[in-house]
Image 1 (tube, rainbow, N blue to C red):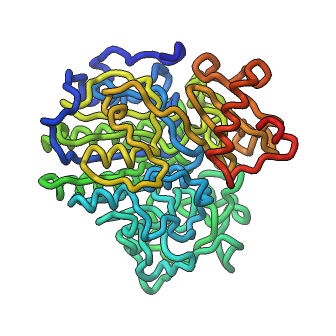
Image 2 (cartoon, rainbow, N blue to C red):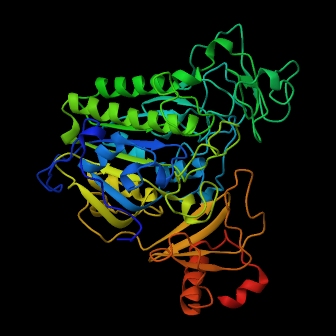
Image 3 (spheres, rainbow, N blue to C red):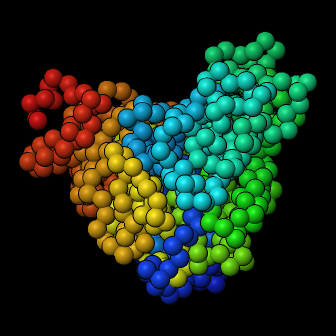
Length: 517
């Protein structure tokens, strides 16, 4: 185990959230053949934002409780340091850079081809009821979406029987819920118009009317003001359909709970995309002002509470012994991400990255190293795993669990024994991606290629744009302070060769780099 990662804290009544540690037997041949699967994905939650990883500055009692009864992964990774690519990999089992995935605007077309194999389609083929509820950010429609009609193709075509989602992120228009391809609560007499080029005539924007903002923008968020918050992009109309930021958490939780209730007697797969702690951070009344860290801390507490509510509900329905629950984040943490919400000035001693370098948008480890907990009562032995696991492998691993099929040619690998805590031997290598830039990890080492560009972006995060190849030993140098490229030239050449092979046709080395091949 890495010296810097602490083991789970002792069970304390003061932080109990309904799920105490239980002794359990590993899954075996006598276990349920078709367990339910619930995947909960937070948005921009850092490795250090979950207190069961040993840092108690930001208490997350419900996640701590889930971890005490399940398996806490010290070395779990997303494929990408931003949300759209990360979620693409989760559902498709393919590296997102193969499809040129990037952060999508709110009017982007559906980025997963309707004929492409996906994890939810795999569940559907086995008779599972499937749902996607919450944060989506994978596009919808054909790129010329009329938000006032049925949206085709809808997110349902990816493999979901039911969807109730936001088109992109909470800081992008259109700020509406879309249920099964239709905007919820739309008044036909007040049609929606959306574009990302220039403001509409008569539109109220943050740039032109700062006096109307209750949450000022810092950078990039100077478009349409909705609920006192300026967004990215431009929107007119749809007044009756606009979401209420402060009630969004309850809106989506209630629909997730209703889906579970409706299908408790048949196998189901639920993707539950939390929007916390992504900006703009607007906690519900129950959590607003509940932490000393401002809005960011409040919405992390809210996300933790939502996980606790779901776990307690599954327990009340006697479903926990036949439900695998996975909690993770789409990418690393970011603090100042476009609004003046005080998050950067109220951190105190809290480190959202948990000692990692970089964060969201970064090729450094903080961009893709994420919290990850797997819970399955009676089938996953509670504990801590030091095996390397990536979200990319959930497709093949869950297919193996339920007797499904992950077609040949995907990047996903069957790591079910690792997911269930039955093996400590995880992945050996992985390509990581951040804002179109690629890196490589193998056997505990990280290889970062040279890229042109600024050292940091508007968020203040170090991006990993280096002048030459760098090599880091993640087991001994968590913060990636010591470049080993000159001390270990053989390892550098070996990893570089493997990286160029894995990314052939996607990463193009400069002439001066080719001599290292």
